[in-house]
Length: 116
Image 1 (tube, rainbow, N blue to C red):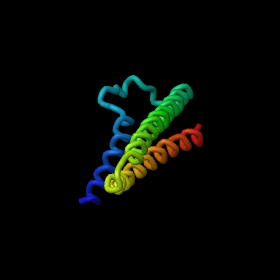
Image 2: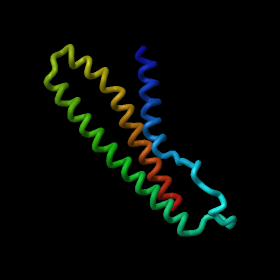
Image 3: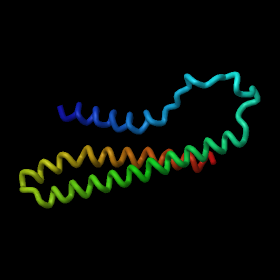
Image 4: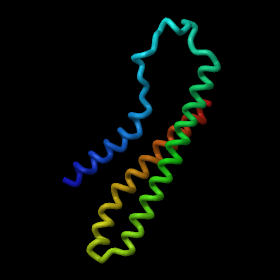
């Protein structure tokens, strides 16, 4: 039961990270583009947009992770011995989610810097 909750939470985290980044191509008219390929300004604007998205993900992820850790820490300090054991079990998925969030945003940032 716990393993399935863990897998579902990992899937939800990955979905939350990936789904907002998808592009809706249904409204693109291919006749509006030249066959010569993207221009230099198009590529530069894509790099700038990618850098902005990576920065936003890092900032929001850091704020949410820090706030969550502060709340968990305060509850852990004020808890009884039985509740402390329960909080220790609840902290594991939090740490996995934080590692995925920071890892994904850092990988995007590194890729942005390499291709820039």
